[in-house]
Amino acid sequence: MAQKTIQGNKELARQIKSRRNELRLTIEEAASRAGVGTKTWCRYEAGESIRMDKCKGICKALNWRVLPEQDEDTYDGISAREYKNHEAWSLFLENAFGDRAAMSFAAGSDILLDHINEDLAELASMPIGSHLGQLSVSWLCEDLPKQFLMHYDYDFLYQMKCSLESMRQRAKYGHSMTAYSVMEELLLYLCNEEATALIELGSGINRFEDDNTVSEEWVFDLLGDADIVSYLYADLYLSSEHPYHFSHWSDQQFYTEQSE
Image (cartoon, rainbow, N blue to C red; front, side):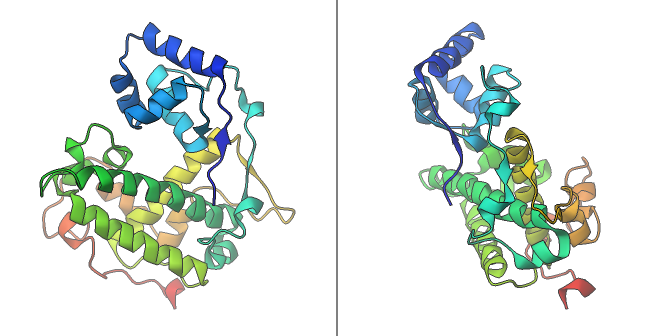
C-alpha cells in the first residue's frame, strides 16, 4: 500500500533549508536528527514530496511542532477504511480489539519494514559484527531497548524482518496474532508505536460508522500485560537468566488462552 505523502513545493523547500541554516546544521546533521539519509534530505530541500511518516523526524530535526503552513487541518485524516484491503489487515485484531488495532498493525508493520530494510542495506556494506549503533542514521536504533544495542547486527535484523513478515502472513489469513516470543511481543509493540505517531500526524483516525475503534492500549490487552515495557524500556538490567534477556527473544515461551 502506498505511503501517504505531503506534496512538496518550492516554498516549503525554502523554509526547510532556511530553518536548517538558522539552526546552523549541516545537511548531514539535519538528516541524522530526522532519521533519514542525506540524499533524502536533499530531496526535501529540492521541493520533492515528503512521506507522512517522515514528517515527525523533520519536525524533530528543525524544532518545529508541524511543518510550516501545515496546521492540523491540512493533513488528511488516517482512515482505517483505506487499510481494509491491506495485505496485513488482521480480521483477528479487528474482531477482538477493533479497527484501530488492525490498522495499527497494518500501517505500523509497513513503516517498521521500511526501517529494517534501510538498516539492513547499510549494515550489508559494513564488516561482519557491525551493529545499529555504528550507523550514522537509524530509526531502529532509537526504538529498540538500549541494553542490547551491540547485539543488533545484520543477522538480528534479518531475523526481525522474517518474523515480521511471518506475522503479516498470519494477519493476512486471519490467524491469531497472539505473541509466543519476546520478539513477537516487541514487533507488535513497535508496530503500534509507529502507527500511533502516524495517526497523530494525520490528525487522528477517521472512525467507522460502527465506531468500534479502540485506543492504542490494545497491544497490552493482546499481550495480557505490559512486561515488554516494564522490562525492556524501564532502565532495568536483565541477567541472561531473565526471560526478557536478548538471548531468549526467539524462545517460544508465552501462552495465552486467547490463542486457542
